[in-house]
Picture (cartoon, protein in one colour):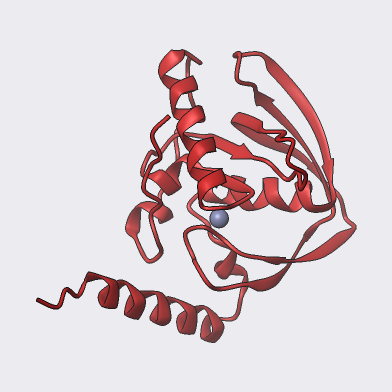
Length: 173
Ligand code: ZN
């Protein structure tokens, strides 16, 4: 399974809305496998297709801490319920390397989605899984966790990411 390159903010594609999948075929399953491999290698606990440059409503998640992997594949996920109760986690993002911030989100969410085999499913999530799902669904709508921060904090992070991008492009011969 080949790994894919992860797109780093700022990049206009990360701000675009992803499209629904009409048909879960082998091509989509191959993409899910590649995304999972890319996420494990990063390493990360969630990855949306837009982060590897494809505007498709596809997410892979694995919050298991043990050696035993427990991947969750979400196709066309729709958040149908968000609790009033909130929780705060320190979030990071594979597209925003090296930066973390405490973000408050609904503590529980319920989603409808399509699984790896094309079956309709329903899931109730709380704790870190709830935060992770909301973070990844935001990606599908062109939203990043830094959008929840003050403009000042967000600008500082984007400036640093830009600087880092320029530095990594420099080649000394
Ligand atoms: Zn992210």
